[in-house]
Figure 1 (tube, rainbow, N blue to C red):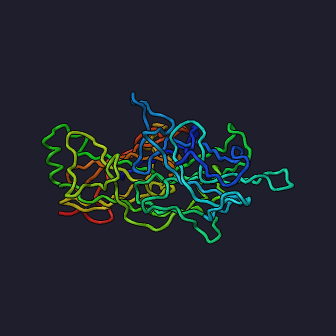
Figure 2 (tube, rainbow, N blue to C red; figure 1 turned 180 degrees about the vertical axis):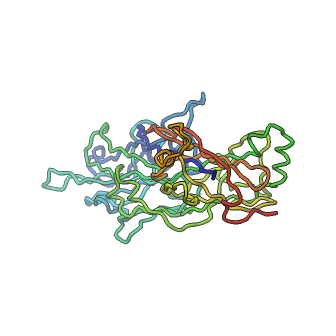
Length: 406
């Protein structure tokens, strides 16, 4: 049977977090009453992954937390505007009733925090209605050469080019007004826009003889290159129109590349310079990548495998492309009649977008021309990544796009 790697489930959670500006001061710009002008923002996010590498913040006892801390900050860009859905960066500050600024902030605590580089406009003279200010949140924060930019000349969109080590998130538009109560501060809800793939490697996990495992690792040689085909630019054409319900259809991806993988808990490229040895003493998690999501496709029993992802592996002795097909479980003969029905087969496939979902992919190197690939899945739960199950099988030479080496 062809290997069918598994997929996992999107986890978008709502956890009360707060946005902490890089400064707790607001400039004195001539307002006669500063307090009602101050902008406080809070936010809800899932188990956030940092812009450096995927992570889950923990306390001193190793317990996973539902919010960032000063030790695990979540830095974001915040765009603010007095025009709904339009976000230029004109630097206006509210004195004339207009705000148009791209600024930044950091999630570090659970208390509402001050956004220090913008203020709410006061009510226009003769009006009882305050001017609303609209906000969107973008992660990672624009810095170090990686910058969120407006995607259209009308300043209605946002786009970001990622390298595979950033957890790209978006918080749809919220709004607030002058004089709003502190406890009613506008709240962001961040959503993951990419797919998190985690990679484990081993020399034949079912082989009990260590010397045979070592022989398998030697036959393949060190891993020299490991990449994945992925689009590398995310675009949100109309940021003002995004909701939690239409998020998947509101985001597009382009610019396909051979994307590098990165060492687990690091932003260093995997494999390391000189190559990485295939583990022989047990399964090791070695790498991750944050890549563009895809939509799972069902294949019937007679259809040739069409991979949702393709891995490219070069070792010292062999080179091959590995198709990764998304399944949420092994195919099960529920009726125990010896016949796999189309319904039973289809039930094993993941047919939705992989946006915000996590896969743990095991690359199980075997002797000969075979790598077994299994993918752990995450399903259910709205506040965390959950491991659910596994489907696996062997990929033989007939399933590969290019032949293995000698």
